[in-house]
Image 1 (cartoon, rainbow, N blue to C red):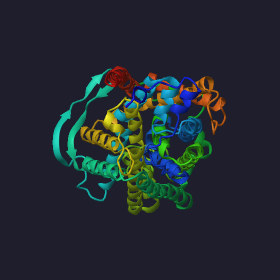
Image 2 (image 1 turned 30 degrees about the vertical axis):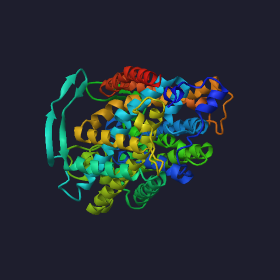
Image 3 (image 1 turned 120 degrees about the horizontal axis):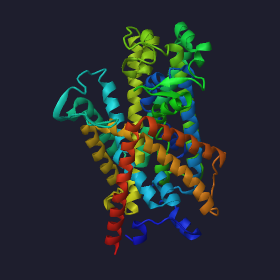
Image 4 (image 1 turned 90 degrees about the horizontal axis):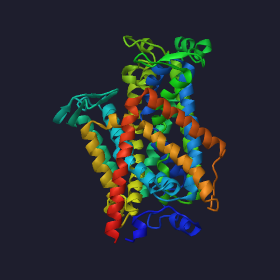
Length: 519
């Protein structure tokens, strides 16, 4: 392999730009507009929408601010998608966001994103979603449980470092994470057999879970309205604690303003709406990417955000927000203290009894399975692109000789994900990386401004809607959220920064290795 291919250098002139942004010729163009849109939607919809509203409602203690948190997330997600659309149309290459950061800010930033994606963001999310699948499967087969150990290696005691708590996890194989491992292995192998096979699975399961969310909204409108919940959550009560001068207790004796608590509340909703950028990872396999990538990003995020906001209105019309952890009935517990935070299940149980709870468990399993397929399919393309640049194991750049899929990358991703399933640490790691995920979104949109200045001559089949105002607002709002999280949730920020910063020496070591072996 040439030194040029294995030691990436950002494009510096028009000819370099054309060379660096050509479409990947060795990959199969198997994703049309429908499949690309389904990948956006399917990667976004997991189990979060059915769960995180409980935590958000405890933090904001206001129906208006609960909806406000989802609207802020919706704004950021859609503006981010519209901005990424320009980058995706300019650089329709496998690796997506990794490539955008590499070309706009330099190879180091692209590597740090890919490093963090592999170590925690993508693999940790796949592991967590897989375990969620096992958890809800356990409703039907109680033998599937986190306490049913097959091999229990050890328990790591909690370690307190300032505000952070590390450790406090069980390491080993139980029936719940065994199910997760089986799902991850099966989907990873299936995705070797061509992009069209993976896309077919994605389309089927995305249609199923979008239908489940739409069904929740329709049944909620027709059957789910509860007089006491509506009286408690709407009318004058809708705006309680929502004034800009209101103060909110976020625990630990900390009292913050409305805007600050709204920023803190974004943790759950942003992660529930995350992974929309995964379609950019597969850009090298999208048909007519200059058109289909921006369209799929806009349509996919728009539909999902609309469903998410609608679902939260259904939650508020079926259950009172305020409740008691000691409450005996669904109405007494409310949204804030729904059993194990399963708000979606509580609402369906309120409408249909135990049958409703079972139907919701099935819907979440479908959602989790489809979400994992999208994450597995997309994530492997980033490590493939990094390996092509000499910044990951060389063999990861190899494609399957028949199906032309990044088979080695899929297997490497699968192995690390299974280790995270066994370690029990993925949930903690995901908490730690929330801050860093938003940092990389900010940097990528800053990169949009950089490329407009440094490469004004580059072909832009699609230009970001509302540029420069909407992308600038995104950067300001996202920076405010990150600063607030840095100040008030250090347990979720400093560890994430440490994981990212550890990638700096790794980058220079890998770059040195790439230069040495190419001589």
